[in-house]
Amino acid sequence: MKVAIVHYWFVGMRGGEKVIEALCELYPQADIFTHVFVPEAVSDRIRRHRVTTSFINSLPRASSMYKSYLPLMPLALEHLDLSGYDLVISSESGPAKGIIPPPDALHVCYCHTPMRYIWNMYHDYRNGAGRLTKLLMPPLAHYLRMWDVSTASRVDSFIANSATVADRVRRYYRRDSVVIHPPVDTAVFTPVPASELGDYYLMAGELVAYKRPDLAVQAFNQIGRKLVVIGGGEMLNELKRIAGPNVTVMGSQPFEVLRHHYMHCRALIFPGEEDFGMVPVEAMAAGRPVIAFGKGGATETVVPGLSGLFFQAQEVEQIRSAILQLDDIEIDPAKISSHAARFGKQAFFDGFRSHIDQLLAAKAQATARNRG
Image (cartoon, rainbow, N blue to C red; front, side):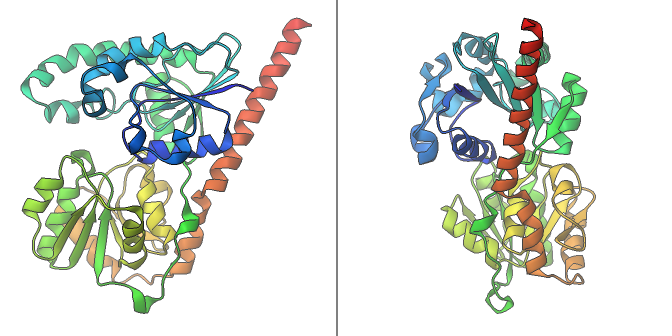
């Protein structure tokens, strides 16, 4: 079976790229198609596959300014030739599903989320944009929405990475989807004895405005407890500027450093609303509780009283109160780690393989009926 994997862009190793890694394990023969490919920014497993880029990759400064070329991406996708492939898997949160699949191919879209900058977070992005972008966004987003909805008909089956995203797929595309949580490598984390825990809390992940890392820093400034911040992004310098002496902003770090802090922190702080959120699952796999905003994907992974607790508004006082509230909850690292194992890689492999097998079997039966 010839398999094509279509991903929006490869400029780092975030959650979407970890899903592609897992798909590369499932389909080692697959070819990869994308808009922008920065080989040194991705893993060896992804680099071992043949990667074909759209014409976006040849445009000036595409590796850093790829989002500026968003209006051209629908055209670029439709230029990609996927002739001869039997299975096409598109990985969607930027434009990816809009390829033109071969007539006889099965096209499955793994949806991390419909494009948030034209749908559920459109006004947030526009309000935070510069004057020119703010002026251009309404007509461009209008065009992209029409294209995005129309290309949903090119997909045979949607897989959502969470129930939260399944609701968005239903709202924006009027399509049902199967929920298969993304793969988290829970096996690389091990709870440590209480005697080895540090006296700090951890916030990790991409430091961007919609994830509200500033709220966590302000809460810890007020409460005076230690916070370690790991991650890069557009808000890195701002967080360094507002951080008090008890807050250490480390920036991007190697995985081993992040893994150490997962296992030795008192708890993870997760102030943003995520589509799924691999970071809380990684922290829980290390046996550590999570203090999370009670919306989005975290509500599907964090169990209050067992693996953490929620605060219900993105406000400094709510985060501050939740930090103090966690002091009164009995933490069992082994139970937290066992709970996180439900979201491990094997669960993803089993769920994805089973769904594809069912779709292929149904397709084969339909073909046989039509020939008969």
